[in-house]
Image (cartoon, rainbow, N blue to C red):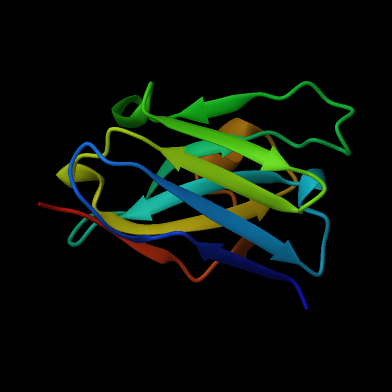
Length: 129
């Protein structure tokens, strides 16, 4: 069964850090582009950060970040663990949202634009003092 499971969400104070994990089962995540999306209350879901297909580490990696998180968030993958991470630093209240990971064998640009085959269930991040 193909599945993506996010973990690592929670409550954090402004300026704090969290690391989200997206673990895949039923397929090899490194053959897919992976994206992190978020949806805040009353807003549309947006692509936050995406990472390109790895093909077992044989391809050069490319990443994308939405302007609002550049310099604060870092996406990475661990092929051996079949997991993609989103390191989030200097968190702001405006980062509060449900965060989803997603996968599709496509380009970084396409997946961050919403071309997705598989979605996780999401994990809530609340940034508040």
